[in-house]
Every structure is written in structure tokens, then in C-alpha cells.
Amino acid sequence: MLKPIVEAENISFNYHSLGGETEAIKNVSFSVERGEFISIVGPSGCGKALLH
Image (cartoon, rainbow, N blue to C red; front, side):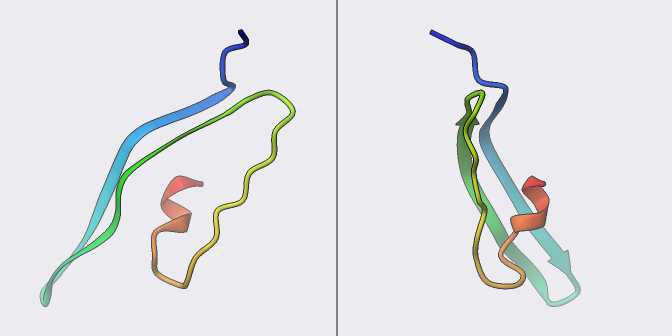
């Protein structure tokens, strides 16, 4: 079995502001094998750029 070339486990991130806290992503896990392509999609402000 090949090892993943990218692996992420249980990633979480909250935005903090004066108005409070916003959970952007919670417990995201994924792996990417050699030759695979992935896309991260979602509305503006949902945390996509945090994984890039």
C-alpha cells in the first residue's frame, strides 16, 4: 500500500472577533494519494483557505 503524499487529521479552526467566536472548520481529515486530485469547495468564509 502506498503512503499518502498529503495527510491531514482532525483540523479545526475558529475565527475570533469582538462579537464572539465563529467555528470555520471542525475535525476535518483527509489524505491524498499520488495521482489523485482534490477540490475544496464551499461558500465564502467557510474556511477553505485554511486548508491551502
